[in-house]
Figure 1 (cartoon, one colour):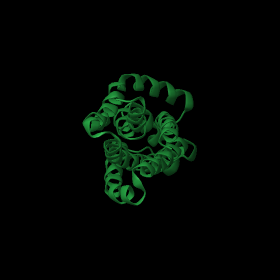
Figure 2 (cartoon, one colour; figure 1 turned 45 degrees about the horizontal axis):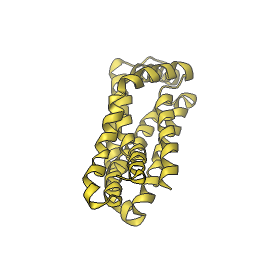
Figure 3 (cartoon, rainbow, N blue to C red; figure 1 turned 135 degrees about the vertical axis):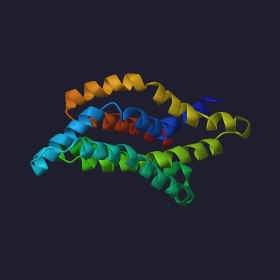
Figure 4 (tube, one colour; figure 1 turned 30 degrees about the horizontal axis):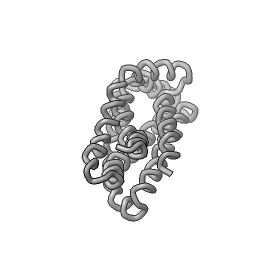
Length: 202
């Protein structure tokens, strides 16, 4: 395997399936902070403390809306990959990731937990696009004899980030306390991965 091919697989993993593995593994860590934020926002907005059922419902929306975004992203894969090509589609998949990062980072300042829900939706769209286009692009760029090895790097990218979940938990808890943003750590890691992936795909 050449150095360029290895670098391609590595960068594609960061900009592609890494997004999926990151969002799946990191969302549980700031759960209590997000629930507390929902409670505070609801109290300021309506003048009464929400019940545990409402908080659980809002938290369920935050977690599950990601899969709806993934479905929307997957539906758009065929159109985008044919219209813009694999390479440009991988770059365009970063747009919803940037929107997601901005929405979740600004949710505290705006006093809106709904922004976290919308941000998770955009994160799902990014993951739905990246997860599918990553495999197609990697397979088409690789020589025929190495196609299977390169394609399986998609699973490796998911596994690596999920295997780091414990370290992410510590990072998220420290970051949330320092920045006072319920999802700021997720946003910053997301933005960092985007900044790494874009130059390598140009």
